[in-house]
Image (cartoon, rainbow, N blue to C red):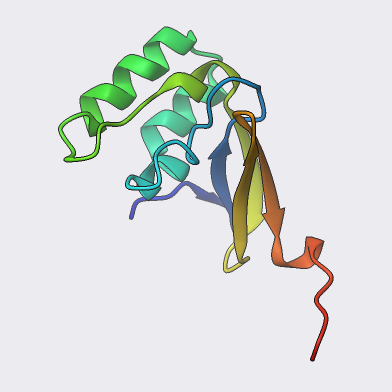
Length: 107
């Protein structure tokens, strides 16, 4: 899976806006978290319509339809390479949670 890596950090896309999740509404397309072309569009401040159009060109042919609704609130989080993380969602608003953000209990 292609990723943007700069100074040992990986660009991860997520959508904190309410309405639709970028990844959480598209679990069948994990590459949407890292796609270099989408990362560049977000970095350059591209219109969300352009981001949606690009995403649909890339992934709408998948057996599970890709829904690009989270494009209007896309953000980039830079994580150290190898950091484990997950994307949580509430009402379309995504939050990126790393392994370091969690306090684990041991039985």
